[in-house]
Length: 396
Ligand SMILES: NC(=O)c1ccc[n+]([C@@H]2O[C@H](COP(=O)([O-])OP(=O)(O)OC[C@H]3O[C@@H](n4cnc5c(N)ncnc54)[C@H](OP(=O)(O)O)[C@@H]3O)[C@@H](O)[C@H]2O)c1
Image (tube, rainbow, N blue to C red; front, side):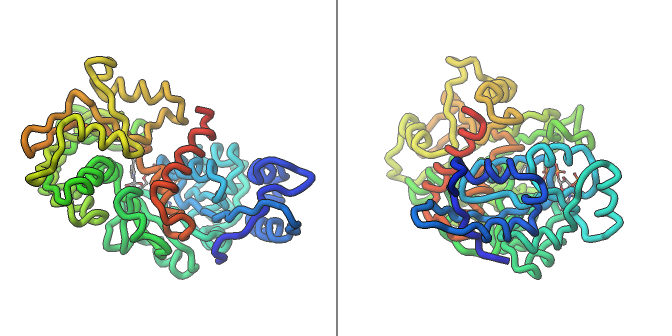
């Protein structure tokens, strides 16, 4: 493993971002085992700009994995070195179209060989991918990732798990605004779940203003992702019978000072989660409803809109609005807060927020890569860089 490679950003006579050039090269020049030779073999000349390029592997190219891959691909300080699929199913086409080298999730030769008859070039198994990576983002299904940890540790590769894994297994957890500093140069972390990321976005700025915070909240959860045919309920409201639900305690893995309990129910919708939150602020907090809204609007990845004025009164319209913005897959990386649903009464703050479960964690993964690699220690700088690059990538 190398700790990132210094790649020439511009190499005469070709101008433009190096990624564009690499993608225009024939596939064999982009094959990861050759990549390092190609990159390092390029002679550095005086006056050339250099950029630290972190080599990122994506293990699990599903709902989250394909989005993280594109978010990484959008950045100028990191590059996708390969993505894995368990078998030659439809997601492979997207990887091929994007120019991401395809690997098999397993090292088993029979499983690797199964890709070729289906028309896909497979560059090897997970071990081959880890050999050329600086960091791996594990986007395997919830609770499956833990079994991959040993392979990452043995390969000496830094790792990021997702919210379906336990904090204790990963050893650290992450959201951009809560604990970027604590994750700097770490060997691994876990980007918390979509719900926990959403809670962290609005609660951390409140905590930082007030110095203490006590929270009771209910997660009204989507039953399944739009592309998921195996989950439910489709005609029931299903309470999570473990109280508190994992979401509140999960917030405390990134900001232990916030005293928070949560309950959760799953409802038959696929679009978004909705949170109903009641926060008790300490005496002397000095806030009003307007100042809470101002506080949030000065923090990244929070959208505040007035439902009555805009006509965006349900998660259906929020998602339609997200599609209008123009990010791929109609994603909404921001947490959506209804202005007219926010009320501070004395020390008690009431509000609703909506979470696009498939995408709010995506930019956090990019920031988490910079934290673990130690390339940006200011979370606000990383967030601004991540979001600007994604916007350009999507042409918005
Ligand atoms: N979806 C959400 O709303 C959401 C939101 C936040 C966080 N998360 C978390 O993100 C993680 C991924 O969820 P997801 O929704 O992206 O799942 P998903 O859509 O089911 O995708 C999982 C991917 O992992 C691959 N895979 C299967 N077994 C694997 C293994 N042993 N090692 C590596 N990869 C394996 C699958 O490959 P094949 O395609 O080849 O079968 C699939 O591409 C979970 O921890 C989840 O809790 C999900």
